[in-house]
Image (cartoon, rainbow, N blue to C red):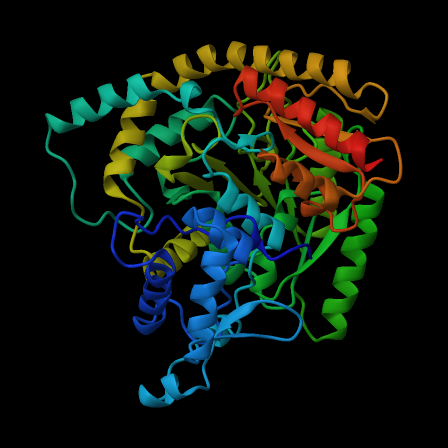
Amino acid sequence: MGRNPIDQSSGIRWKPNPALDLPMYRQIEAYIRQKITTGEWSAGYRLPSQRALAAAMGVNRSTLVTALDNLAASGMIEGRHGGGTYVTGSSWHSLAHASLPNWSEAAQEGSYYPNLPEIQQINQAEFRPGIIRLGTGELAPELMPNAAFNDILQTLSCRTRTLNYIEPQGSLELRKALSLHLQTSGIQASPDSILIVSGSLQALHLISVGLLPRGSAVLLEKPSYLYSIHAFQSAGLKLNGIPLDEEGLDLGHLDRAIQIAKRVSSENGDESLPLLYTIPSFHNPTGGVMSRERREQLLSLARSSGISILEDAAYQELWLEQPPPPSLKAHDLEGRVLHMGTLSKAVSPGLRLGWLVGPVPVIRRLADIKMQTDYGTSSLAQEAAAAWFADGHHASHMTWLRPELRKRKAFMLALLQQHFHDIAEWTSPEGGFYIWLRFSVEPLSMRRLFHACLDEDVLIHPGYLYDRLDTKHIRLSYAYASFDEMERGLICLAHAARKLL
């Protein structure tokens, strides 16, 4: 899919020094040789493209090629049919050093799926100086509560801190604070029914390996955030997309998918039921909100069919005009809904802190697995988060944040009307971060558009990251880019789209 992600960014921060007596091509040769001989670039490793290497090192192409030719002549690298230059594993060099481990081959053998190429490119490009991030799903640094956390950390420095491991489910102080916080959303959850996790991704991983047998079905909205990550697929689970309408999940399609999943499980001698993953409030990537009536109907269907629900509430508090309908967990009287929350979206992704609410046996099972993987989320982060909730910072921060996000949304919508009114359509989200923009003209390749924008230092999220068959959408975010960056980035995006048309 697309080009090799290394072509966009070499990841190399080293440059030859022209002030040295050693010629620059020799310096480059020595640098690459050192990478290989120390094992950092192992057998089978594909070097960045010549263009990317030359740009990163600040040299002309001919200087780089001279260095690469010398390395190839010594048997350390080789060009391969179909393109690309690789560290060789079958030369005199490898024989002289016994059998070199082929880590590149081993890296392909693990059971965990790699990210999609474009996701890898996005993850690299987000940290490129000067990049305009039009799709990033996090708050801009100026929207994060830096002053409040400075105060919290100063307060913590004056008291005895917990530097030891914390109990499996996480800090009791934080779980008590979360229990009170969840009551504001209508969720009754005792501290015993809460598990502290290192962000939502860890919760997804724990559920995939701890609660669902391999081959189980996971039902989810289509498009969905889950299609852009591989937590469930890597655990051998099968994703089944359910279309959306204006009120949320299409329950007719969902009911049919449940019956099919049940039949397949029965034929395989397995009585496990599918799990439904849903983002009912300010959905990622569409920004939609499941209506109150549809939520009630969904819970009724879950009861009659016997399925369980994983509710992702990452964006629930990021309403801009009025709160969304109560969460599914607030009306769950059977312990059927697992409720997943996080501080990554509304407060700070760097805290790496989230929570999972569910029946006590489930929470204890997942806590036991968590102890086998990381032995607990950072105790300092948990102390800071407990103070964040207990001292009232969260409520005041959300009161300040919502008007700021409203301004950014209005600014982006005005720019879209100015530059995209004749080639695309979109809706105004009621909360969250995202505008799901649909190009109404054809032909327009989203993959070519992604790369054309990236070449101009503008980063977008094409729709096929959230639905592999999507050929018309991109996810835009008004939460990260500055006003100036939004304007320059959207003008560039409009220009690139029109050029490709």
